Amino acid sequence: MVNTIFKAFTLSAVLTLSAAKLWAQDSSPAIPPAPTEAPTADTNATRAERMSTEIAAAITEYSRDMAALQKQIADKDISKEDAERRRKELSKRFEDRLEAIEEMAEAWADNLEESIENLELNLGEDLTLNIKPSEPKKKKFKKKLDGLVMLVGTNTLLTAPTTDFLSTDPYSGLWHPASAQSSTFGLYVTNQRRLGRTPLWIRSGLGFTSYTYDFGQNVLQLDPPSGSGYQVIPAAVDLRRSNLSMSYFEVPISFVINPSRRAKGLSASVGGFAGIRLGGTRHVVYRADGMGRVTENTTGNFYGSLFSYGLQAELGFKRFTVGVRQNFNKPFNEAVLPANISADSQPNFYNASVFATARLF
Image 1: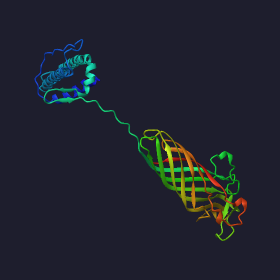
Image 2 (image 1 turned 90 degrees about the vertical axis):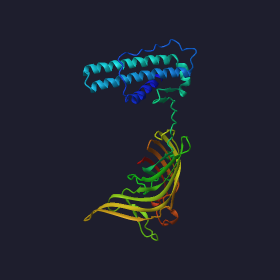
Image 3 (image 1 turned 30 degrees about the vertical axis):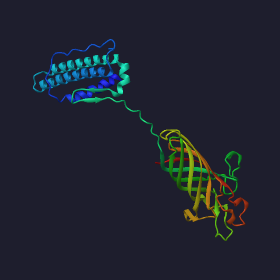
Image 4 (image 1 turned 60 degrees about the vertical axis):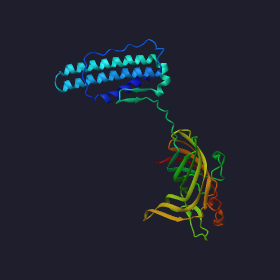
């Protein structure tokens, strides 16, 4: 630490004094001998004053000699080789003198360490250095974490809501044929806040979630609500795609544990969500003789449940998570479904989604 202090003294003093026009002095200044032990009558103040005087003298003489050398170079009174040799001699003599002063300071290191906070070195009227210890930097905790989050996953159709996916048989009716794959997609604006300086956070958001039910080689047949044709039946055409998407405006909220100071490490969260229906779309793509590829999109509510709600849990790292969510509402309102729908065609299931998310920004 003492060596660092002397370097600071030297740099500041040279920058201040080098502009002065001082006379050159060829004779080498005497190097003060280092005392073998601290003088018993000295105090911290006198020791600091003595070191301040020695440093000031060394810097003044070095600056004066360098200024004289620069003048000789400018007046071309000295060759480049002699100027370089003279510069090295002055630098070596200056370093030797500072090393001697450093040895003096080391002899008093114990007492100097105790009073270093109040040490003031006065190097003439034009230069005063106040040495104060730097305060330890406080650790900064990230307080908020906002962004746009995209959710992509797959949902399994279960006969009853559960948190144990292995103990419940998937729905086996026409709504979930073996060759089909249902999916979940969401896009949310999130707002995450830390509770004080703890690893606990609260995350809330607003966004849209779409639950897509894939019918495979079946098609959802629709008649007006007063009719009896709302059911899933085998297709009579060469189907390329047949699904129904129900969209909801949802509000998720979760408690998050993230011990990372900058919120960039591992995290775990658990919470719930609730939403209201926006509408649905039936999407069918098939090939027909004489028509080629045909795409049909039909919008409506499709007897969909007015509300969605459930629980979800996630494990994450940095801006990515994997998780599960369980809907506790049936996706369709059975109270208004046509009474003559066959048992296999009834959408009496619950969604259990496995998903991944990424915070886009």
